[in-house]
Image 1 (tube, rainbow, N blue to C red):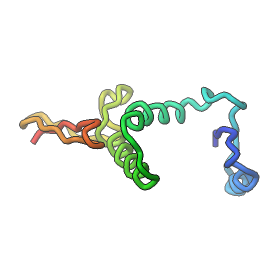
Image 2 (image 1 turned 90 degrees about the horizontal axis):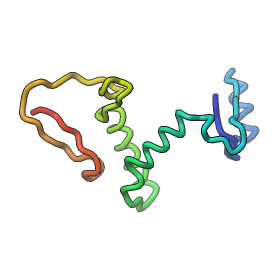
Image 3 (image 1 turned 90 degrees about the vertical axis):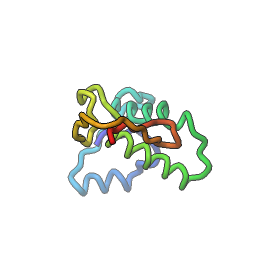
Image 4 (image 1 turned 60 degrees about the vertical axis):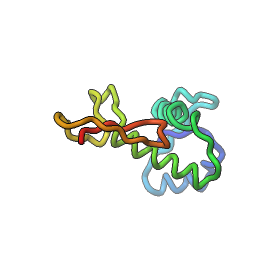
Amino acid sequence: MIRDRDCIYGTIVTRRLRAMGIRDKPTAPASPWQNGFAERLIGSIRRECLDHVIVWSEPHLHRILRSYANYYNNMRTHRFLTKDAPISRSVQRTGIISSRPILGGLHHYYLRA
């Protein structure tokens, strides 16, 4: 497991990982670029979601992040996946195009009805 050197990863966590047979590999201090996948995801969440909404409480934040995760995995196009979503969907070739707002209209999902 690649992880940063956050203090939440104490000896209890590292012992538990070793007991499960998982090797622990902390990144170098002050080197966020060493965990590029997490940094890219965190940046996407911030740029495409959290920079545009006001979070009122922790439950509200959880609802926002669940909605964004659903959008990101089921509807958002990804160039690396040849403009498909991580959870693939069928191509809709006929019908009238309609729009569904997501996250209060921050993003939209377009489909054919």
